[in-house]
Image (cartoon, rainbow, N blue to C red; front, side, top):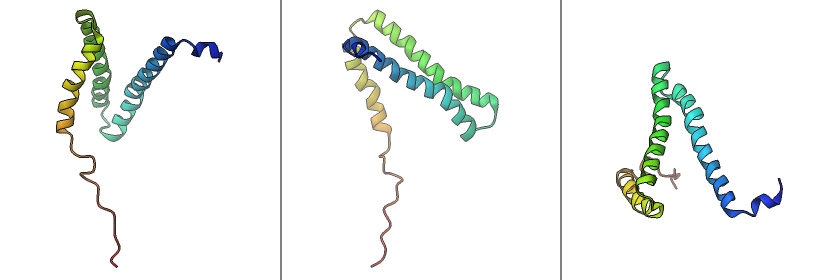
Length: 109
């Protein structure tokens, strides 16, 4: 790969964002249906509905982002305001990470 391609920072940022987006899309549309069929149910219809949840969520998010960019053009402010609004309920309702971890075994001395 020619090194001159890495000199343009904006182009590199776009490629990095597209790569991360492709990773999320691939895992959601290929790996998740396989996991749903293996772990949760053997019904083809249920696997289809579980698979649609991920792809539909991604599509719905893209539609909302497009509407948001068109109607509220200041992207920096959108991200600054939406991050606390989205993350606060998640942080409040999540249990601690070590809630179900057993303490290490200690042999009697």
